[in-house]
Image (cartoon, rainbow, N blue to C red; front, side):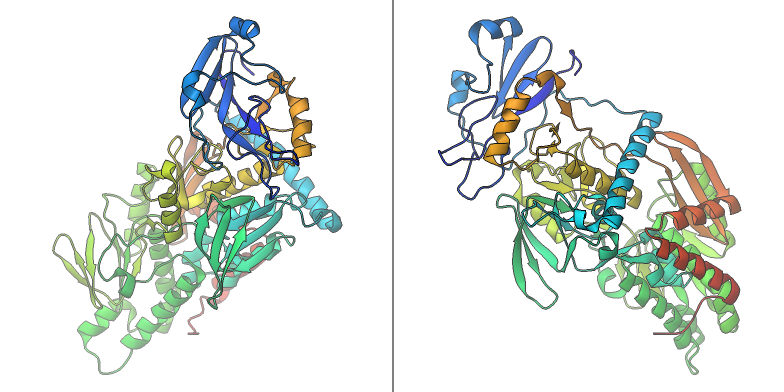
Length: 598
């Protein structure tokens, strides 16, 4: 530990033994949350002792008392585990803190790793993951060790939840996944499935296949009581039940943000899940079949074949590109009389498409979309959607036959309820506030990441790449013996768990009391950006390639398309998915997309 950088070392609170309340190995006195007749695991008190080369600081309830290091020996203010730390008079009457509250570190400034350091660190993590998967596959009896393991509940089967489930050690934890869907969805290819380029099942992977030793419950979480460490759920049949936990992972993603625009929820298609893509794919064919009906007017036929996509981000842009390919490669052959009446419009409220990309790539994307006869309308804000038309803020009204809304992410009701239940979340807007270790601020046992969470220290884009890295990070925190209830997570000796019995607490107390200078802290999460890419139609794409914080370069056109397909193929979560996706691409190339209605 560097001498010039102050570190906060939290005081552990022992659970009550047969003789009564427990005490802290740093404070020696009684603390809030110490001990219970139910045998709950030990947790860390809110108060903490701060060590550096010059002084010792003590904080409780937000107050600090500093004293010179040389006075420490004279006054005995900080002693062994058996002796108490004297508290300043003003601190003695401080009310007991909540047992599930995490104070904010005072001066902790973690080192940000360089790209080579981060790559080496991730390589070491990958080696550990390979060892874990080897044991899981070839020594299945070792993957489960009895029913007294701490329970980890994972809400969601998206990028973050799936990554965590694959990486977590089921020898140490009983893992329960609660989600209304029992599969992981490769969302970057959802637009491709809606247009028929790939099949729906090719981009789905059952969550049980990612780790056969987890338990899955098909249900929707309706409430979280972080003080009781319990969640409330409801099954598809309406059955209500509750589950307690040692650690909770909130990875429920985000909903579609309609911005309160009238008519959007009723008349527009969304593109968030397989069901959305299936409905959208059927509706595209429906529009052509209706337009082909004899006796309708030319004006009505043109309206039915007008497709409007609202939102110029990656989802909206890629669906417009995939739809353009579907029209030019396949529907043109089957509906030759109607294809000339088709119009595809892409509306964006901003001044450019793909705002996350470099300006040159945005320009390339715009030109390619227009080359494929997609009418891109910028600075177009939708204020109302009716059954047959879309009204813009400019006063224009666009007749349409099919509308797709891909204009942003909204907040799920569960996330909003969690925010409202925690005082420390008072500054949160649409996402849960998390700390550097992805813990929900104001709790010690709840993690959150992905689209439903944001760090006010290091905000990150809402992408699958971020969520997947965050999920793996949290799994590794749990796998390693880290005191997750500590103000700054401390790496405990391997023989100790982060959920301690009174006997284990006593062992830890004696072992760590003389090793304060050797204490190691868990590294905060750091995102390793590899870039972003988007398909823009006509077998062309744009790619912004990064290496951590450094931009490697921009690629566009056919080369970017090859890179786009290569990355998406290798990023599939299983060999089965890779084979199915590759098979679908070959099949589409040779025989075209299927236009059958189901």
